[in-house]
Amino acid sequence: MIILGITGGIGSGKSTVSQLFELCGVPVYIADNESKRLVATSPVIRKKLTGLFGEELYEGGVLNKALLASHIFNDKQKLETVNAIIHPVVAEDFNEWLKHHKEKDIVAHEAAILFESGFNKLMNKVVMVYTPLEIRIERTMARDNTSREKVQERIQNQMPDEEKAELSDFIIVNDGTYSLIEQVTNIIQQLRK
Image (cartoon, rainbow, N blue to C red; front, side, top):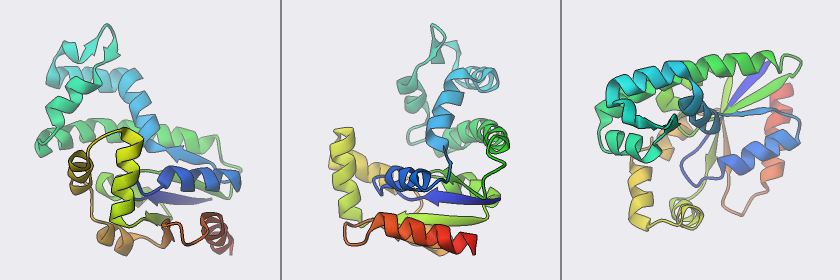
């Protein structure tokens, strides 16, 4: 089984590329969705986060996302501490997920912070979705109904595209010029060789 990492900056089109891989028969673990689910439901994560930030973090048993964000926003140390709590649980969940896809020759793991989290070490190959910065900003502003400044702030907190590209085995260009499905099928063919 080949485990393919899918990454790219905010607004690059990772989700669209992941959907195309799924349409081609490659199951995709969406780390962002799964980590949100686990932060909301995992007793291990809950215990550690409330130990750090207090019981009010889970009001009425539900995670107060805004409160968590306020604790870690612009505090690199707290963010790293929270990630050190969440990432091992996500890795465990991913390993469980893999057991349900043993019959597949290729599976994928999509994560915006694939390299930053160290999950790239679990991958056989990595594909980066590259989209020019201005397109990413415009897409994210429209999708999240937010300001240019907020999007740029989020982009600055991510690893630069140049670094991701250097660490990746494949690059999918998502700028409207090249066919995404063609790029995805080419990568699948190369992986199956």
